Amino acid sequence: MDYENYLAKYYSKATAKAYKREIVIYLENNPNAENALHGDIVNYIGRLRNRYDSSKTISRIVCSIKSYYNFLNESGKRKDNPGKSIRLRDKISKDIQLQDLFTTAELESLLHKKERYQALEYRNKVLISLLTSQGLKPSEISALTSSDINLESATIYIKGSPKTSARELTLKPNQVLLFYKYKTEIRPKLLKKKESDIFIIGHRGKPMKEEDITKHVKRIFKGLYGNRKVNCMTIRQSVITNLLKQGNDLRIVQVFAGHKNPCATEKYKQTDVEILQMEINKYHPMK
Image 1: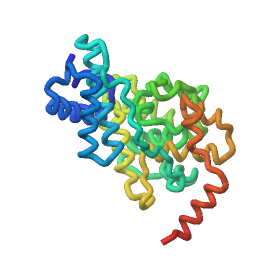
Image 2: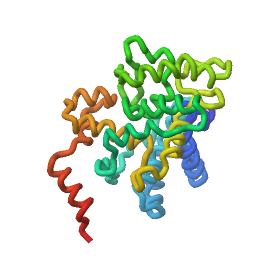
Image 3: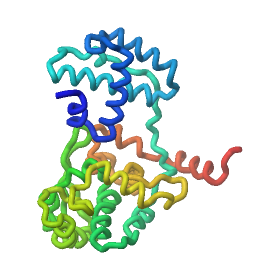
């Protein structure tokens, strides 16, 4: 197994592509990379800082290098990872711009976009409802199978991942009939006599992958709310934020979102002071 196959095995298509590019550059600049020591990698990172100002770029490159040595470990070429203990001290902002998110009403409006073809309209409504009602990630949606949807109990089972916990969520009343029609009538048409357990099917009869879902949402809602970006991430963030705004217990929202750490849920909370300050900045910006 080469490192390209290794990346494809453990990472999304987009991440694998980005990591491969950085690994190629790393290997070109370090001919003895396979036998490199911790100090060699640190020196390489030092050279990168003279080239890049972005902390995110440096962080991505370091992750790429670590994945390369993980590949060497798995393939038996090394027994250690010289980059494993490297931790960057750069502060990368992970703040959620709560003022740019969407209200419950705005999220519901996303379900009313008209499609030219009825089959795609139903499929898209099912897809968007999983984003706006359950706040699922694209990776979670692409992994859903027909057996994960229980229409009798009106529940949906979400598989766990390294970053999120497995959970069972309730379908909203308006989703049950929608999902039933999609599952029994629309989905078989989209499959075109092909067989697949994956729940969300593309128009060519193939399962929709994570990157397909991401691109689809960006494309159909581009420019809908001006400068506010409508994508899978902002929709999920909006769902979680709105649940907390409605007074739901933090622990309940944590389980709903699949967050393994309560701190991941807490960052969505807003205090009255923060809300007031955002309104001031919105309508009376300081010039």
